[in-house]
Length: 154
Image (cartoon, rainbow, N blue to C red; front, side, top):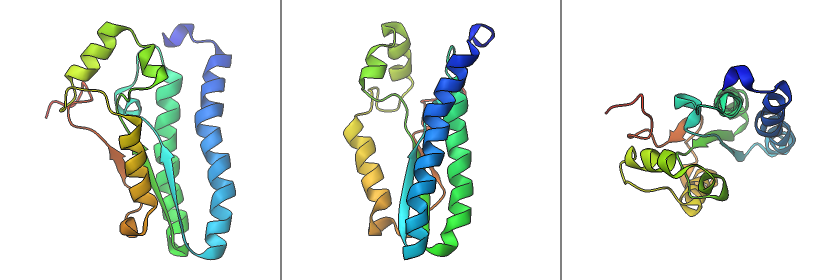
């Protein structure tokens, strides 16, 4: 619960997710601008829209990554550099295996495919976005909205 979240926990998650994204992108994009080509893909989460109860820090950090990437895309596009965000729903990882079964079951029931995503599926999308086949795609939010968000009903 937000009122019980220690400030250090808030800061640690923002430093890892949002600050980490900023520092890596800043370092990588400099060379891309000099070469006048390149692609950046940041990773966010569907929780940036729906929020995760008990994880306001994670939801805020992931929302921040999306805003950061949109701004970055506008800044560097004129130099031939693309920037996109991938914001998947629940993916079968060590982290989601720690989620209580009843929470995970509800999340799976809200997905169109009635299953968790696989890390390989996210990696395939990222691979496409950095490829030349995606040379005109920049700034959109790539996420699975269809029935993964309890606020989205259609």
